[in-house]
Image (cartoon, rainbow, N blue to C red; front, side, top):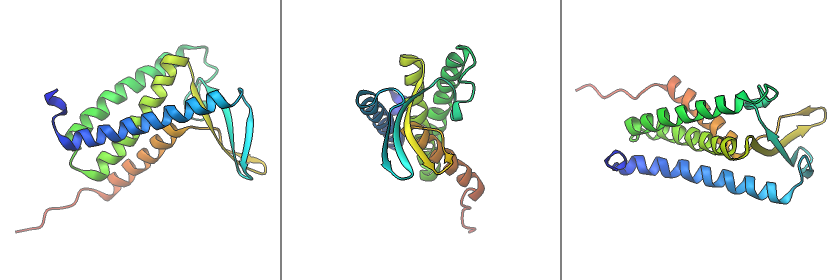
Length: 164
């Protein structure tokens, strides 16, 4: 357990765990409350809907015949190991570590769905008139925000040390 001895690393792993728990609690609640493809309007532009996604973002490869489940599980597991190593290395860089923790929690949330269910549970559905965004979940939101923060962090660069 020496690997996880750093309190900063444990803080970021704790955030990833909190995202994972929130993701699965919301998926459980929606799955136990709605029938498959049942749509519950919440606001004029937002509804809850229970859908199952066997593909990736925007249902990419959803109809690929089944191999994609194991492909996305493998990608998620590899990403998990890479992100944990990056978190260990950058645990004391709050912007970067926060973004990595978001991606880690989201990736694990969706990997667990794929392993246990064979699909990802999606339920957040935004729409307006003829436009509709594909349904997504808390894990997808965390991954998206984390990825955006990673891009932002890479564009901002590292702070330079003052010259002596």
